[in-house]
Amino acid sequence: MFELSKEHEDFRKVVREFAEAEVEPHIAKWDKDHHFPSVLVPKMGELGLFGLVVPEEFGGMGDDGDFTSLCVAIEELGRVDQSIGITLSAGVGLGINPILTYGSQEQKERFLPDLVAGRALAGFGLTEPDAGSDAGATRTKAVREGDEWVVNGSKAFITNSGTDITSVVTVTARTGTKDDGSAQLSAIMIPSGTPGFTVEPAYDKLGWHASDTHGLTFEDCRVPADNLLGNEGEGFKQFLKTLDDGRIAISALAIGMSQRMLEETTEYAKTRKAFGKPIGVNQGISFQIADLAVMVEASRQLTYKAAWLKDELEAGRRSVKEVKQAAAICKLYSTEAAVTATRIATQVFGGNGFMEEYPVARFYRDAKILEIGEGTSEVQRMVIARHLGLPTA
Image (tube, rainbow, N blue to C red; front, side, top):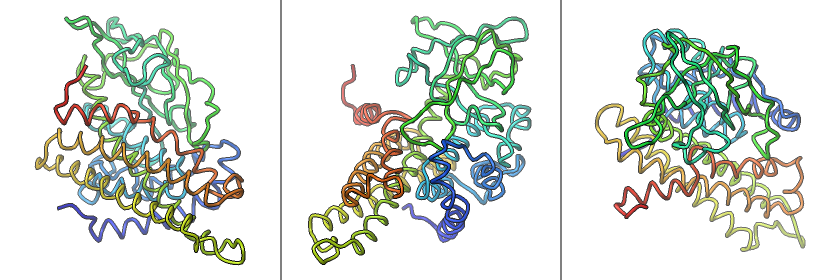
């Protein structure tokens, strides 16, 4: 049965110390200024956070790392700040993993060493203004002309796509039509600075203020034909697997949020007084905090079981179906629990919870996107129902 090893728990302590020393003192200002701290990325690289699932030949941790370790790191960063947590989650899950999983040896050697070291970041362009959950409605097109792909279209809400150290964005594009009339999608890597590749201004977001998120536009953007990631027409299959892994990682991010809310409310209920007594003596408060503890524990169990299954899958001991179902379940529960956790925390803090000087306000703003990114809650319920054998439309 799955459990976190002593090595995982020791690693947790290392990442927690890093987050509390390098992120906590600055995050309120970064959040207020909507500043992406690119200076932090190489430090995360030095700690090995971007290389936890990458072989040693590309600068990664090799046998000393695994997907569970990545989830531990994301949880601990997310406990201090969600923007930094998603920077790691997307940097590995959406930036590194597609290249590692589907890239040629040349592509891996070209991009992975800098990405693993934190000298660069990569993004993954799937979502479009009119194609989110319905990824099959992708309108971005790539046409083969000789030894080049010519890409036209746009992407929306792409993380790590416009930083000063972004080196490449992998985008899904229509490269043909299948026999049934549906789009044939392929994944193509487009390096930053390629003519015709425009990074739109950063979004003015509700939360994740210290995370980098942009829309992207491609106008007759030409890249070499060998920038195709994997085989032509396999883009749909590739991003489905990418999202499965990403859902577990987002669930770990949600645990970090819920854990922090549990810590904040517990301490506040002990020290804040009303009517001459700590507010924690009131069952209306203590019962809500008890519910928080249950949600944290349940989220952690579901998420690390899914991470364990993912590692077991890589070792050939589990099935894709098991991982896909576990990923959907943990993502659905943990993210909805995190949104509830921030609502409870804000309520416990009362008027102070509405003030930006308290971290619960920042986490409250950051929470909602967890139910949307990497597949909405509704999509997770569809996946779970399908795996139960229920009829589908």
